[in-house]
Image 1 (cartoon, rainbow, N blue to C red):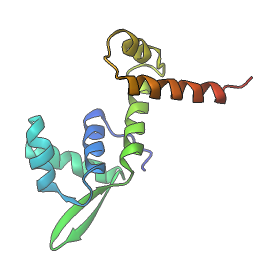
Image 2 (image 1 turned 30 degrees about the vertical axis):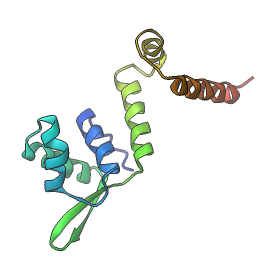
Image 3 (image 1 turned 180 degrees about the horizontal axis):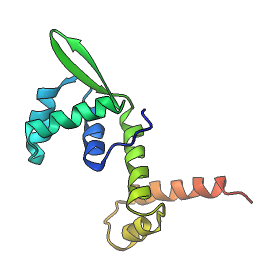
Image 4 (image 1 turned 90 degrees about the vertical axis):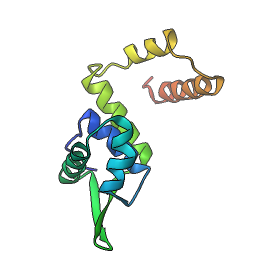
Amino acid sequence: MSTTRPGEQELALLAWLAEHPAIAAGDVAEQYGASRGLARSTVLTMIERLRRKGHLSRRRVQGMFRYTAGAAPGDVLRDAVGTFVTRTLGGSVSPFVAYLSENAELSVEEVAELERLVARLQQRRPS
């Protein structure tokens, strides 16, 4: 993946593209853009910007370019979360954890996953 970080809208599109490999730009505009109220030209510009930044590859298939994200969906999501924490939360996850504890409706499974993640963090902490 490129070292040039995508913007928030680009990250959302990149995450979507990671789940829809080898898709034509017109299909992206129709399936992704239309449902979000984005103009076709906006989506096409975002696709080209992501490609220039190195986050997308394209391949010509039967005369039409098909675009694929350069990273797996999980990697794209982790990058998006990292960008959010860095840019929006100033590098601190505490506000996000506070939000989860005060406002989020989490399932039993989600709470168990959070507990597993905290346990993993505690194991990595130096003594």
